[in-house]
Length: 205
Image 1 (cartoon, rainbow, N blue to C red):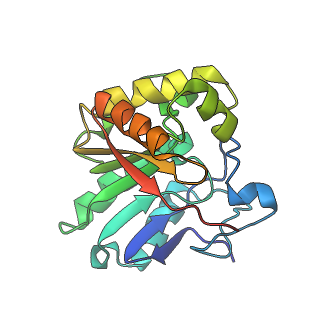
Image 2: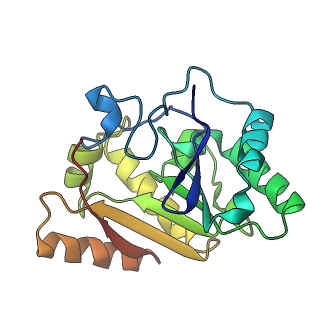
């Protein structure tokens, strides 16, 4: 049974796609996993329609959670139009919808070929963007984006633009093999873009 939405630490996560333009070295999907510590069956045989996703989310009573997070086993902004449609529908029928977060690699504008950041205003409360390094070289070594260094530049530009429309923009790094100096550089970079830094614990598979 495929998982569209699932619970983790009091939040409801939504898994819309397995597509991704990166091949991060620490991503579980490259080690043959079809799930994660969050859920066992995140690999989708078919992507849910927006209506299927809406029904699945509503069946979980999202108003009972502390946060609604679009994440899953791929890059959710591949389906940004559907994602924003879902948020509009949920906000329309649930006046007490919790804060909405997207976990993203920051490549939405690159993937979709347009600046999507104005569309996030009033819909997305928190944006969590994978930074993974303080330089283009380190970023590409860890994240392995399909478009190489262009992916690094696109992620930085997306973050800077999104900070104008989303109340809380967070950039994340995984603490594996990071020195305090590297973490400090990442923090300075995030803050220069209008974001804050969150250091994530490395979770071995």
